[in-house]
Amino acid sequence: MSDFNTIEEILADLQQGRMVVLVDERALDVDGAEVVGEGELMMAAELVSSEALNFMVRHTGSSLHVAAGKERLDHLGLRLMVPGGQGRGAAVVVSVNAALASGSGISAHDRALTIRKLADPHSRPSDFVQPGHLTPLQAQPGGVLRRAGHTEAAVDLAHLAGFQPVALITSILDEGGEVASTPYLLDFARRHGFKIATIKDLIAHRRRTEKLIALEARAPLPTQYGEFTVYAYRSLVDNNPYLALVLGELDGERATLVRMHSGCLTGDALGSFLCDCGEQLHRSFAMIAAEGRGVIVYIQHHEGRGIGIFHKLKAYQLQRDQGLDTIEANHALGLPMDARDYGIGAQVLFDLGLRRVRFLTNNPKKRVGLEGYGITVVEEVPIAASPNPHNIRYLRTKRDRMGHQTLLREEHPSPAGGEN
Image 1: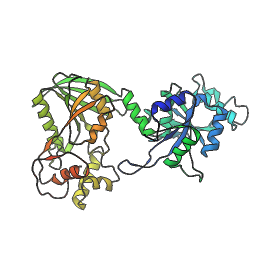
Image 2 (image 1 turned 30 degrees about the vertical axis):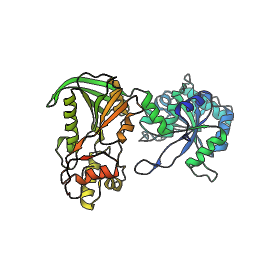
Image 3 (image 1 turned 90 degrees about the vertical axis):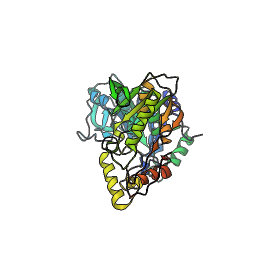
Image 4 (image 1 turned 135 degrees about the vertical axis):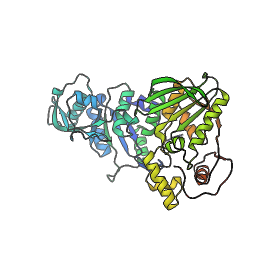
């Protein structure tokens, strides 16, 4: 059993007015494995009492912040400390006091009042004065699906628990005043009877329970493999397009042949010999055409296993000049070997009515990216590759180091290099 609680358990405690611990994964190695987590204690802002606030101050050793969305802060006329300073992270807002604070605003009573007023939907700009003794943080639009930070996670959880999207948060430090490690955070939660969860699990929960796509267009698409229909979806998280090419009538109860294809400009469109991407795409079309029914989801922004065209070409250069393989080249650039996510793609399949699929892939990790979103993979159907002197090392690396079930039709000696 995991040491962490489920998001459902977290929400239940928040609804009871309890605090919870959130752990992020900012300190990761290049492939996303957690080295150490940073934890924050949070609770819904509208339920904050003097006693709860005092507990946070005494037991975390850190300063208090109120996490809220831009729309809420704008409504209250609260300005950023640095205008235009949102950037990619949470933005710091000028500190604030409730205008009705009985004293200077520093006491637990006054600060709790300020926090509750920030969450009160009836509050107005005249209810606050700046500067004060509480510092709000402005969360990124889209929450943890846009930025995996504590500020966004706290706002998301408050909203999911049925409260105003405003939360009180504070970082948890250890006895030496350093950022607490994950083992310390787990022990902290046990000692105080708090539920504890990861931001990663919150992201998975939101992707699993919310509809994050919008159908923008549907049109016929005649191809050399038959008359497909193309569905153009837009991700509501980042506006990236997802194209679903559908052949035949889909039946949710019948296992459907599906290819989740990561876009590869060099392989799919330019005919590169450094990879097997274009070959996998065309073989998928042919296999679906032979069955008379199936789906290809084309994910354009997955270029280079998610690192983008520029970094992919830089990785090519490292492979050629230094003899690195595709994984080593990514790591030399400070990038993970695979940065792709298939949660939105799974939602496309679900929206098309599919529930059971026969998955066209050589990468077993893609299966994990589909399951958990209402899609059952009943079979993995491998795609044979015809290696050439330019991509044989790349194909062997995928097979031997990345766990791909790559079917090599024949072996060729090759120079260093390969598609990323």
